[in-house]
Amino acid sequence: MNGYKSLALASALLFAPFLHAAEDEAAKLISEAPADAEVYIISPKDGETVGKTFKIQFGLSGMGVAPAGVDREGAGHHHLLIDMDEMPDMTKPLPASDQLIHFGGGQTETEVTLPPGKHTLQLVLGNYLHIPFKKPVVSDKITVTVE
Image (tube, rainbow, N blue to C red):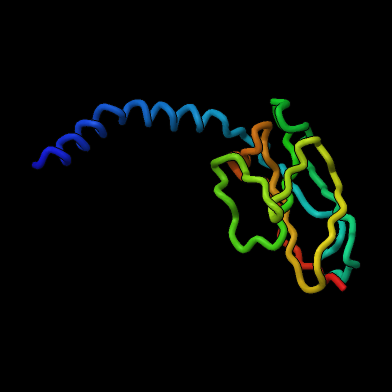
């Protein structure tokens, strides 16, 4: 075994317990959601045609809404996914972007402006740290057509 491989192996063996401990700590940050928790889009409806600027209303049952940073059992806050083909990593805090909008203030509706054409909308509920729940609370994806 050359010196670099020996050093890499020794480093891996030395730091493995710390990496495992860090993974254990991160796992503790993922909250449990009640089995009956459900998030959904109240409006617009799937297949609806909307104007360029339109309101989206969020629905939630089996849980409560709490702002980001407030660690309350059985509560979380909404994240809106717009035109996302793949789900983000559901074990880490959801990254904010133009396509993944955080509602950390506990908002239950928003107004968006989108260009004409077909768009998809979906909700994900996150805990106080923006991390999806262990059994992710995710809405059905709906499609709207913007005139």
